[in-house]
Length: 632
Image 1 (cartoon, rainbow, N blue to C red):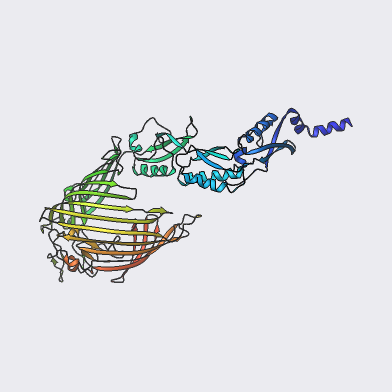
Image 2 (image 1 turned 180 degrees about the vertical axis):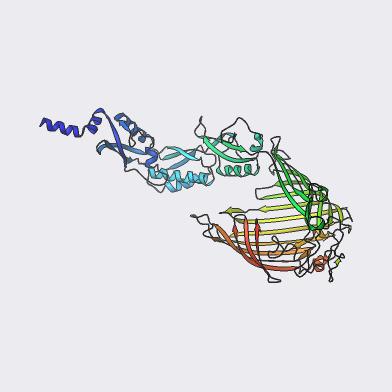
């Protein structure tokens, strides 16, 4: 019999021996009668710091410490632990909870709050007074209401640290709100490791965020900081990292992690054009190297001031024929770091050449000799940002405008092919002075309000733009005129976006734009009708040139399930309002253009590309287009 008893002991030697030693292996941890519900600590939260965890070897002292820790939460009247064998080598630990019950809540106050309105305290008291006693569930209700308010305001560190006063019914909730004790810009190298200092002055970052020592951390401030610091175009990686202060866990330190972009860039593009020589065959003499050179410095002296330049020509060997250049300097916060409107100053000198759509033939006309418009001068602009959605600009422009033909010669009138093929040069005057060259000084102003935001890649919201040019009579022929445009676009979301996919929601786009000229404005500044940004389905200027105009359009965008993009259908119309005849020489009539038109079509958006098919309402011709960017 003794041998049999010994054999039984050998079969159970591992668990029994551990029990005799006072230590045992935890196979599982159970919770019985643990209250559950929103705001009540979960089993994982309560048991996360205990000694009794699966796989741990614990002693009776460890288990006693766990019971004391659970009781010290103040949420339970009693906690017992039952230990039972489980399997061959382990034990199951069962914690049995008895919920603490206090008298009903008579009064409720919050301590430590600076951003919590009194109405929230009243709301809490109204909710909990309905209960005859105060339990863990009642405290959870208080916690949910208060912390829910903080979360709704973006105060993510606003939490209740503990309650007291439950024994008397005068309950006090102690809150921490996440007061900021330090804000620091941390510069990173290419391996995302901190470095001692960066090229950018810390005040450049400081003026772009709203974090301040003594204020509460708000997640909306973090989003604004990310957006505005990225818009500086000085950094390719920006992160806002809040963390508890090591000296006071109720406070918050904010680190803004920044990796700087290269501040100096230069690019060049080289193009070769081969012109026919004698006998119609190209030779080495006729090979013309052309192209463009760009350079940029984004961060002069570490203060975010920018210098940009570009030079382009079709023939570097003879650049005087068509040299184009632009040199631009941008000075942000020109009125100082404390300027709430973020006033910026920009100045540039320029020389550009563009084909004028004013002197363009209609669809029933033979090819028209091109008229190029050269603009050379200087411009100074002041910009104020009233809010993130609205800004204003004011500029003064001094420029010389010269109209030229294909050979580069100055021309004072437009031309067309006559009935017999002869060139007729009795067209509309190309400049105000009639000589082919105008010199003028004028002011520009602009107002923009843009509340659009992107929903799964498609804009939703509203955009309103107003621009005006005002000459003051200085220049060739003493030009005095006022030229303005006003546009309004609405992106109306027709349904909710899908929470399961990244497909854009259906959107209706409604657009209207108009403008007028008062005074003696030159033909090159007349409004041109037709083109991808006026009325699709026509070439730029194909419908006419006018002093007044009105365009309106509607576009419906629907999601394409497989491609996570949208297809669209549109209808557009533009008209000169009968004002084409008031442009000097009436280029609309001279070049046999309609003066108004409409179009309809459909297409699909593929990344930055719009592939669309449009039918014009005048000739009923259909045309397919592939264009970059947005129509509206």
